[in-house]
Image (cartoon, rainbow, N blue to C red; front, top):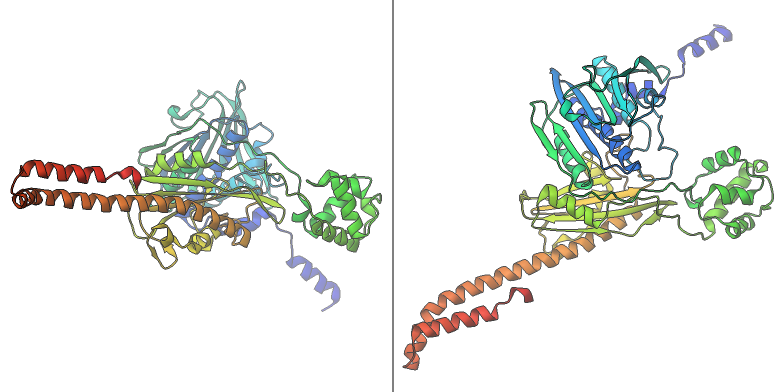
Amino acid sequence: MSNAVEEEIVEGDHREISVAEFFEKNKHLLGFENAQKSIITVVKEAVDNSLDACEEDEILPEIHVLIDEIADKKCRIEIRDNAIGLDRETIPKVFGKLLYGSKFHKLQQSRGQQGIGISASAMYAQLTTGEPVTVYSKQKGRPCHKFVVRIDTEKNEPEIIKDEVIDADSNEFPGDKDYYFDHGTTIEMDIEAKYTRGHHSVYNYLKHTAIMNPYARVVLREPDGNKVEFPRVSRELPPAPKEIKPHPHGVELGVLMRMIENSNARTISSFLQNEFTRVGRTSADEICDEAGIDTGRRPNTLEKDEIEQLLKAAQRVKLQSPPTNCLSPIGEELILKGLKKELNPEFSTAITRKPTVYKGNPFQIEVGLAWGGDIKEEGSYNELRFANKVPLLYKKSACVTTKAVEEVSWNRYNISQTGERPQGPLYVLVHIASVWVPFTSEGKEAVANYDPIRKEMKLALQEAGRKLGRYIGRKERRAIQEKKKRQLTAYAKEMGPAIAQLAGDGDSDQIQEKIEAMVQADYNPEQL
């Protein structure tokens, strides 16, 4: 066989594939593993987007999730929010193009990061039912836009089937009028799904979301028509995160090379100052001196080995940590409100640690503990895991939060422990807020087990554990005192006549009253 024929065959066996094609064949990587999990993934991606959109414009979130069973293992999902809505030009790309989004390139805390979520949900609907996604977007004072969009998976481009302006009060607008807003976005899609209750369920995901977002009102209408409301208990939104520039300690060689290639800076010194946070003129000069490179040299003249020297020098030079206003923690007060609202515990406590940095990326850890009350004692504890306020329901054992919980000696805090896990009527909430959460997979189901993150979580859990331990200790001492009080009061009935007889004089009833008064005076619960 000639070389020309061989080359033609090799070329014929190879072709470029789009990211949409790849995930279409590997949908399990995005959380679409089965009918039960897929419905949670679809709802999760839409709700996350709605919460982010509302918070960005300082709107108290109102989200409705409407689910109808339309066939065996097929459901119609509608998610509606009261955000400001999407403009007409953006809608097709958001829902019809994977890896299109506004968050991937920003160093700023947000629920979504990759630009995959909601477009992947649309792709899943298209793949499993053959139906496109329908989007209604209503901006205040403007007409309602209706789009019907498919994904051309070979090109990873949106295919617009319908683009029209409709009357929001017309019959063309879907579903129940009770769930309308005068502005916001409504998504409608048919998917292969199985609606269930239990830990891995839409209901449980929304309940956990309500705990971490107590300023949101979320309504779920289940397939049987049952309406579940998770009311807001706060009208206070957490502080909005600010976008920051990358920090030299968190940049890798390939990224730095690309930044230099795309930069218009005239000198290396100005490049370092303009492209990075916490690098002023003095720091830029120190980095260049450390690398042995002239500060006035043009960045695009640097060779690869010189760029590597510059990066190593930047990582050796002591710089201020990056600013932490890029984070938006929920805060101790709102965590407590969320726990009390949904769990009604006997005791709860919350800890928000100070922000810290891992590889140039700021992150912050928050924990909450809820004990007793309406929480049933089911043996082992219940764990609530969150990343940027988003519940993580799957892959618990692979998550750093679980590792941190298992490193704490809970028996020190008056909590029984079997092996490495606490026992009793206990919920443990762990939240990581970060500009870039190190998820273990594209499905965003578990956080990677990095030492600095696990250490911060453990310290926060120990601090909260001490508070819970003091409460349980006081409660146990109070119970012991109550038992002693009851015993002594019971003995007083027998001691009164006996003492009166021994004394040969006195009223036994009066002696009994005095003994009971002494017992009562000696017992002061406030001192425990």
